Each structure stands twice: as C-alpha cells, then as structure tokens.
Length: 330
Ligand code: ACO
Image (cartoon, rainbow, N blue to C red; front, side):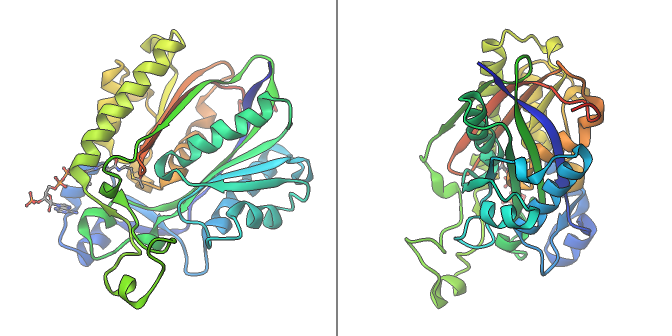
C-alpha cells in the first residue's frame, strides 16, 4: 500500500501583532504572568477584512508557488477549522475558488485544536486507498473572531493563522501511523455555547456573550497534559521509536508547559521539540502546520516526526510521520 507523504508545506500569518504589552493595556494581566504561565510573547491578529478562507488560501498559494504545484491537479481539499467564514458554504469551497483548484472537491471538519490532525488522517486515507493523487490538507483558524478581549483567562492565549500541506502517494515515506479519539465528558470546559442549532444567535445570546470561546483552564490543562503524554508514548511504542529515533516532536501549541511535560514524558529534550508558541500563541487547527513550515529547512527525508494534539470536544490525535520533503526536491 502507498503511504501519504507530505510533499509540500505552506503557511500564512497576518501582519498585525498583538503583544503581551498590548494586552496589559486591555485586561488586568502582565507580560511576566503570560510568559511564565504559557510561553507566549505575541500573537497575530487577522485584518478586519480577513477571514479563515483568506488566510488558508494564502498558505495554499505559498505551497503552490514554492513547489510548482498545478492547482488544477489537486483532487481534494480537507480543512480543519472551528472558525469557518460562515456555517456554509464550507471553507474548502471558498479556498477551492480562491486558488483555482477547479477539479478538487472538499469539505471542512470540526475538531478544535486537533483539526489539522483529523484532516491529515482523512486526507491520508484518500491517498492510501488510491482514490486520489494530491490532497491539500489545511489547518486554519481566525480565533480573534471568537475571543472575548475582556476575558483575561482566554484572550492572552489565542491567535490567527493558517498552514497547509500537500499529500501525495509514496512507497517509502509518509504517515506511518495515526490515531485519534474523542470524549465529550465535561465538554463544557472548552466550548462556544451559541451560534449553532441548540442556541441560535439572538439578542439574548449576544448580550450574555455566548458567541465566544469559554474555557475552564485548570481542568483542561490537567487533561491535556495527561492525554498528550499518553498518546505520544503510545504512538512511539507502536512505531518502536526510542527518544533518540525521533528527529522532532511536533506538539499542538496550547501552552509551553503542556508541551514540555509531553516532551519530558517520552525523554525528548526541548531542542527536539518544534516550538513557535512564543510568536503565534494558540492558533487552534493551524499550530502544527505552522510548526512544519517554520522547521522545514531543518528536516531531511526519512526523519521521524511525532505529531500530537489535544483540544475541545474533547478531541486528540497522535501520528508518526516519516518525512518525505526536503523543501527543494519534490
Ligand atoms: N493574567 C493574570 N492572572 C490571570 C490571568 C491573566 N491573563 N488569567 C488567569 N489569571 C489568574 C486567575 O484568575 C487565577 O487567580 P486566582 O488564583 O486568584 O483565582 C490564577 O491566575 C491562576 O489561574 P489558573 O487558570 O489556575 O492558571 P493556570 O496556571 O491554569 O493557567 C491557562 C491558565 C494558561 C489557561 C492554563 O490553564 C492552560 O493552558 N490551560 C489549557 C489550555 C489548553 O490546552 N486548551 C486546549 C486547547 S484549546 C482548543 O482546543 C480550542
């Protein structure tokens, strides 16, 4: 069976920076608190006329431009996001139109911070089954559109961005193993309560601020630490990978303390952990492809990567990838 290899990467973050110093002017917080509790220094914020499909299309355009990909050859577009431009049409349809992928079909899937991983798992199956030759997998979120900038416990965490990878069949390299899970116990600890079919938008939902992300940070933190460690250990055991075999751990960027606890649990030093939370914060479905884009020059074909994410739902996923792409030779 062919594997689904990542053969190209693209990314996009908006120009505007929201620094910890800016947040000190907006809510009762401090740069020191934010840095020591989360590792974040600044995040990017979309322009007023910029939505998720715009950022995702920019990431896809970068991937296309750098690698000479013909947009018309893309068979499918799978998008992980919790902040689609609107409930429908799907962000995938809007991206298809913006990048001229005229022969592609596609859809969005909702798995919060595990969104990119679920999209990767789905895209990989289309390649492995032989149904498709080129699948564009996107993780993109405009978190600033669902954040309450008066809530200091959440507004310091999130930022906006988009990342994309291209999957193609390969005999040797690719997604070697991927697992995912869900558990809705205590889902209220991390959610957006209104705007769906249970509580459609109304003056009351707006007045009660139900159209923004809410999170009980401490229990989510505990759960994230234990699940990220458990599934990272599990995927390494299944792939017979010792710590020294792993070139990089690629963790969802929710909190640097969660990331370092995960790395510790499998004996990986922080030099072999992809980290960009200091510059982008938590961009939800975009964190993992943004990491891949930041570190791609440092990767060589055959490198073992362990990807891991945990988020609202609750959702989680871990994967073992043998890297195929060196950024030059596709
Ligand atoms: N500035 C200053 N003080 C603050 C701030 C702030 N920005 N935010 C909260 N505090 C205060 C609290 O009010 C509390 O004060 P108290 O003790 O007087 O009540 C104190 O700091 C400690 O608050 P905690 O919430 O316990 O702080 P904690 O160390 O847990 O850090 C954080 C909070 C950063 C949110 C952490 O809990 C976290 O990272 N949680 C998990 C995030 C995550 O992984 N989410 C899943 C992915 S996101 C997704 O799927 C969309």
